[in-house]
Length: 496
Image (cartoon, rainbow, N blue to C red):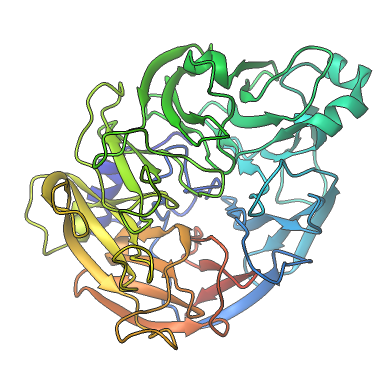
């Protein structure tokens, strides 16, 4: 199925037409633009239908980026389940109806170097092909993933002959290190990390494997035209322009974090557009770290949004910024006031009845204000922002940032902190339920909430666990409206 323009989706949602019921959830952010648009009206958050672990060996501190599940048009839930801290995992397929296991496969993947455990790369293409990372920078694929049998295969972006000739070297030194993104034709893109020498001189960069199985790659240094740039940030998924011609990807100097945002030709990986990532307060290089969960988001108008850390990591209360560019990365536009570890979601303007501005779409972002960092007061929020209208930044008023259309404070006081200091919204991507004019988001208080954009209230939520310092977690909605949330190393299926 081809991508439907967001404007058409929004019009259908608010003209009384039903959402299509055959649209799968492809992976991180739901689609190749990471817009996190629900394919159907979400069910009420009434109860937990079923749950399964996403981590068989969770660390004591959940410094983990859990991979976003995928859901097929036939309503099969696909997800990688971490087995150990090395990188071994299971790809599992479960019935969305009751969570029953359809099939599973163990994969001897190896994590790239990390501080916080990276996400496990996997993606479901529009052709219903499931891609998942293997050892040595390889991809495995499985067709007909709704069934316990089907065509399977191996893809190697630098060539199967090269891999098979020196497999042990590549397995030890090459890792797929970002989520995978597929375009409408089934071409896939991902970042990879190289930690040692190898016979063909691979260096860390971005890879493309075409729908025909042919692979290509470009090193981060060559793509950036900068000798100090050496890596794609771990966890930062490539995004695809709506016309499919451009791949947006961040690159950085892994030692300093200094970053550049690139637009690559989607067929050749030649750099078409490039912009340095700059702190709007200090006017110095902003930073991109692999502990972040920020990936580019592409708006319906082609604008590109990407989160960074402020230049000194503290003056903006460690909130970072959500930088904003036009499609050619030439014009720097109004930034958002939070961004370092969040991927923005696209909200049709019609989903926010109180909004009377001129923008056709808005952005949903995490909006934490971490207690004890700079002037941070612990008033942790989520926000709906207007990307076309400015206001003074709430922390550094000399900077003009996206206007707050709606914000809502987390509901649960954190023990031991001053009044109003609440548990964080520890999310990396939040689903927009446009049909119900709402957003579904996780809190570290152990609940998953529906944020009603009509009333700006958090509706009664379903309790999943006791409060915990949570991993970075997503929310998503399946084709039947069932809501999925990861909390405390488990995937929960929630509905009426």
